Length: 400
Image 1 (tube, rainbow, N blue to C red):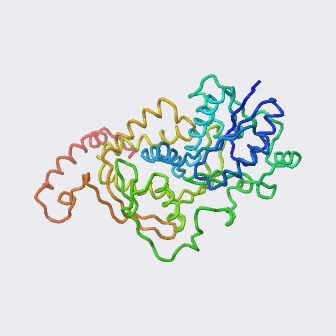
Image 2: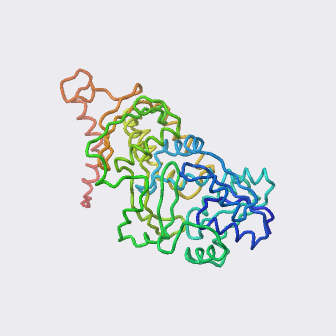
Image 3: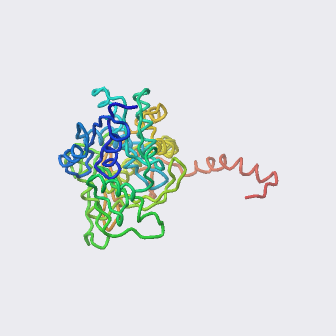
């Protein structure tokens, strides 16, 4: 049995019920931890709510700069995109929250940590792999895998009986996760992948029909793979991302609606808004196109699916992710320069790029006359590459 538990507390339905349930089930002291990751909530009100709900103590930490600098930016340096669309906004937050929980548990001499993730989802894995990676002997409590509740409706009934204030309702039970990088929506009314999400669900991104009728141009400057300036103005990591969210959201950029493959083997529909991350991803690729060697870029791109999968599945603190990160970071040492982008009606188009580290040569690339490239050299290059194709055909291979 646990005597003192540090709970990852968001103030939502699951974790609000979890405080009362942990006290009832384990007769344990519950310490709530809320990470300020830019979710836009009144954290003092959240603290008051946790105390009223039964927490003995509440930790609130503003982690926005650390989150962007040490988690989001490294992930972006790796160009991580899961299954072609998802920029991993929820996935990347979990290891930081779990890391802080372990630190608080050590400071408070707590013998257990807990989270409100369901037994069907990915977050349980992300939290718990981090717990065990950082504190192998810690006891982990996952209420969703133990309690008698089998739906969000039953949780709402429990909260009503115990006077626990929650914002979820039986009519609008979809789950959201928000931080400075994105907001996600899943479950409830979104579980039918054929149905269009309700227009009033979105919070970060302006509907396309309401976006400005004139495009806006912006310039983003990178240093060694990290964005540092917008239109020449130097900003902190979190400040820069917030500004990109505002600009991108205003122009309808960064919304995806996908059916993804969870690590546990279930397909799940997720709707995501990631305006700033989408712009930064496109801008970095523009600067990389100037500065990365061809084979380095192709090697890096071949590793991206694995790197994104590691983050999605919760292996941020694994040795393989750390090894991959070292390689990916090394590819970024010359990725410095500026991308110019045109934002309009949900589109983010690269319209210019420049870099002091550019490998691009106008003399080589030109279709006009030049003195540096002998086009006759291409004949031998082509014939050498054709040798195996000619040999294959000469042996009577007709399957091409």
